[in-house]
Length: 194
Image 1: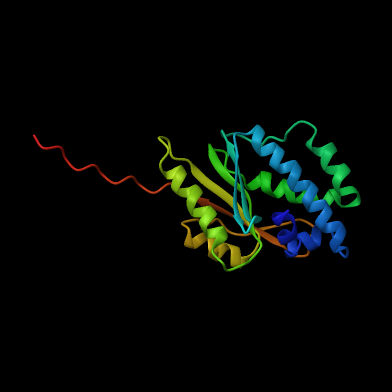
Image 2: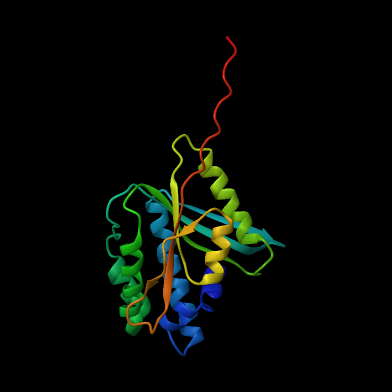
């Protein structure tokens, strides 16, 4: 899966499952599969771009109605089975995400990944989704958690603002950057001729 291979290279992934790239990729692949199934339980969407018959980029979005972040039934048990001895680190990261999640209704980018960095694939998926949300009758706020400053710069170019980094407990200084994008103001309708 594109997302798990790309994510395995991130510093946070190296902390989640240190020293063993194959195990890290397996854990992330299975965790992402679990997250994708949860997205469909929350009216979410999965976007993808194929190039030459292969999946080249993917974005996974969940829809939240507001209030405290809720975990799907059985999530903890399933995550423990996937991650084994690394379970406490995954739960620490989950706790950070839950603690920074907006309490108002919003759409959340769970992950965005592409096989080739800098080719514009992630930007295409992001722009497509944001354009779609901006056309909805009730336009939602959109949130995400960036994993590094390069990602913060990328999302800032797409209208997101960072709320400041949040340290991941026990990670020797790793941070996530919660970000939000409020829908742009609708243009005023021209006055109707009288």
